[in-house]
Every structure is written in structure tokens, then in C-alpha cells.
Amino acid sequence: MPETWKNEDYVKRYNKLYGITEEQVKRYLAPLKLNNSDVAIEFGCGNCGIIARIADSVKTIVGVDLSK
Image 1 (spheres, rainbow, N blue to C red):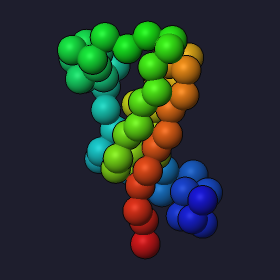
Image 2: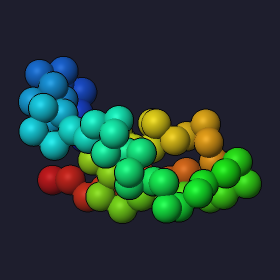
Image 3: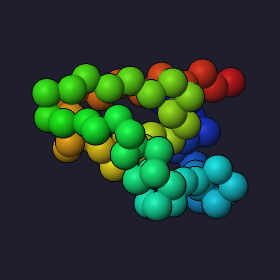
């Protein structure tokens, strides 16, 4: 994890600018009909906001993000 993500102020600013609401997550994921036997991958996961919300709903989840 880059040092940037260890900075609490940075994370708060990031979430305020780019965070996703619970309603947006539900709308985004509804068509996928995920269940506990699924493996999911999210590209461009940022701070893993979506991953954290669905981790208990799938068998395996992987997040990939490129940061400088």
C-alpha cells in the first residue's frame, strides 16, 4: 500500500471527492446477481469502497488499482 493511503486526511478527501454511496453500489451491483460462489474482480478500485461492501457476499474478491 502506498504511503498516501496511510494518511487519514488524504483518505477523507479522496472519499469526499470520489466516494460512492450505498445506493450507487446497489444500483451498480444489482444486475450482477452475485452470490457466495462467485469470484469478483474490480479494476480501478481506489480505496476498495465497493470491495469492502461486497466481500462477505462472494467467495473471492480482488481489487486492482494503479497509483503513483
